[in-house]
Image (cartoon, rainbow, N blue to C red; front, side, top):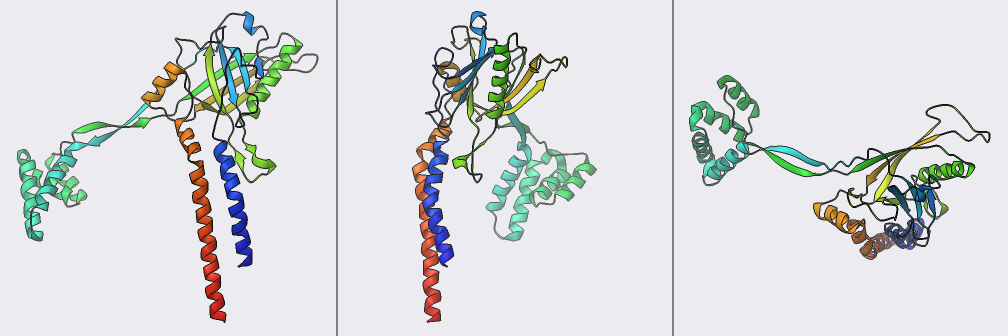
Length: 336
């Protein structure tokens, strides 16, 4: 019992801190400005600002707001696709409607015989154009005899009009892919390419919390913005909500196996795949397009409720400790 009590007490002490840290990790902050508001920015090519062409900016948002935001600015890539998907299924209203009417008729009858008679009568009324077989098919479906109903449908070459309708199931998470080929024209650009691909690859991984391997912190969220040379978001390009970087593919020397004198590769291809952090509603899409609002309201709600979560966990642990103490007292009384 002493060992169990010790474990419960340790859990009680740790759970508050752990939950607070986990909840705090959900809160994201983002600053904006020229290039990246004074935070660390990686740009390729190095004369990107002088080219006066559209830019794509990837901003890695740290969990700790005191840490600098890492941003990567690259030329606007070719062939950016936006897939807005709605998911639909079907529902057959014919059988549902017929069964509802039959069930209503059965509900008003008394006794098994009366209910069967009411069901048969309503089935006949539902399928008068199909004659006796039509009534039998509907009655069989109502009584759960699907095999019998299917046989009669096949024999009579009659089926219940399905009255099939389309039913909305929800929207899908949006995913995005960006492909870049980077060829450095100088030693500084070669180093910049290396920094960029390392920044992307490193930030696709989870980080150990507290230097231990027990818990992992989510990889950082990313903000993706399409900018003009003055670092204002492009008006005529759709906007992207906050995303997770789900895949980074780095290909060395895809066109030719050439290395420079310092053994750096001649070219580096980077393919990035992102997935938005939530399925958006129409209201959120409109807010994103009009106000560039990339804050996840669901995350904010959870963050606001973190104190309640900690309190609930502490209450549960206290209850477990009280139950254990009560069990120990009962055991001691029996032994005495």
